[in-house]
Length: 636
Image (cartoon, rainbow, N blue to C red):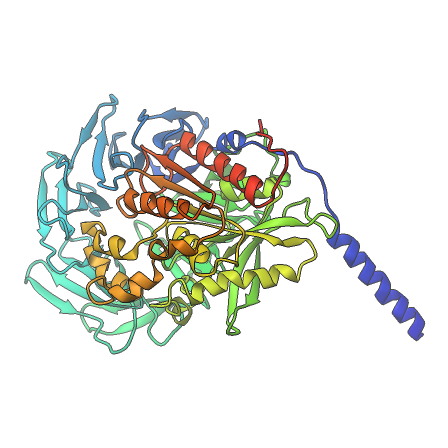
């Protein structure tokens, strides 16, 4: 072929690509109130007759329990709390009563409640000082198991509650900070997990008849073992482990022979694995590159995988298979639309959409789908991230950027819907959600790279996102801010204190600023994870110098860039005094600081009205100090 023709063709491809990259379009600007008109729904418990599904929704402005008629799609609100969130747990096995969980406006001291068919509420775990957690129904469905720290605030003992008389019996006195993993159908065996550090745990089997406690996972080095479930016949214990692997996979242990065999393995972590009630179906959830991929196998049909319809890039999440194993509820998740509840019939291979959680005023095409990207950090380590590029961004219209840092330590930013991210992107801010070293989902080596290096190497991973952004032709790298919640909030203030020239502004949402205080005052029911947290972050008794070094509060005099802090007054993890002191210290520098306190929130938002206030103020702060907009207009 003539060289001139080839060159001309290459030029055509090049300019076509450039034009495609420059392709922008105007989209409608939505207010945070419009975004909050979207409904957040979660959970799915089938009624005994499988005609209704129980779920949790914030449609009323506060999370409450709702039921939906599968045939008519009629929704009924079952609880009417206006203060504390009420989270649906399950229908009762043989009637329409329901179990719920609720704390006191974010204090995380949860109780288990029953709502009867007349709408009356009963606190089944009424000790006001004790925290209770639902574990599972007994296989015979005459009782349920739950944990409570009423005996000792540091330990969650295991109890069984009879649903005929609602009397709770102590099953296991947990003085060793075990986590409950699984209970056999005949209630004879209990499988425990003992966590030492985030990368190392053991698995124990307790025989209630002989009172024998047996270590099942004797090993050396950092290996995790997590019991999942017992087989219905009681012969096997299924468990997940990362032995000889970067990622977790499923094994089963033969209780008679003591031998283990592999059940399912992938090239990513298994998030969960379980069988349906009669073991007809086997479900695995795979954490594949920040997205959940679910597979279901029919054990009565040579373990043939169930084929789902093509949902055009959306992920199937939160699967619940009914007791009859004829029906399944699930949600569809994608980053530019809120999740909706569906029901699937295995026999007919048909599905039905039950909810419309998206505000009809908002067009999903106006929102942005997250894209997984990767870039090199300061030491050459590849860092995964999720990029949200506004429709308006182009070479001619460069946009400011928010570096988004997830919670943790050890969390992960994942592809899914976020009202705040979409709100910011809709108002012409790009967002890059960084999965810095120490994040979960990318192998155990990656997950431990930030141990005792917090506010240092992991922070550099966030800063190096700016170099990646500089390779685009649409990001304004002179206007880059950092935003995060919880541990991500710590990273925000750490960035402003330890790398004061890296970012132009910071937004701290419920973030830690004084690790010495936080680690000394962790909630008592975290005893099972205390040592693991100390291994990763430092022990306040022996590592005080290090914790002083990485705590932004003690280096607040270095902060020169505008800071916004959001704090829940009832937060049991990050005490309000931390944010009070941080704000006061930064104000002494003459730096612009905006402080927003929510008197009826804990560690995170549970009320729509607070999200509206908080998110709207975040956008106003960014418009003023990051984008430097001359005219700040409130969106309607």
